[in-house]
Length: 65
Image 1 (cartoon, rainbow, N blue to C red):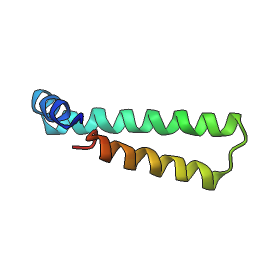
Image 2: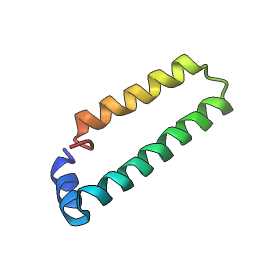
Image 3: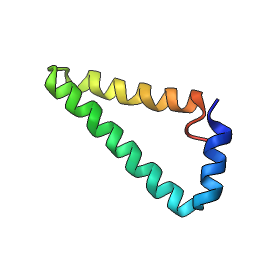
């Protein structure tokens, strides 16, 4: 779904810069999920499951193209 947009952004930034920005966004997303889980008392196993689910959804939606 988003794959064509991601490919264009990667071409615009270049592979190295794209990977840096992508890594920063992924880290920010994981931090947000961790804070959410801490706030609501969600255990570590469930948090890890949510992170894996986010990764799998990103692949399915074409965000990891």
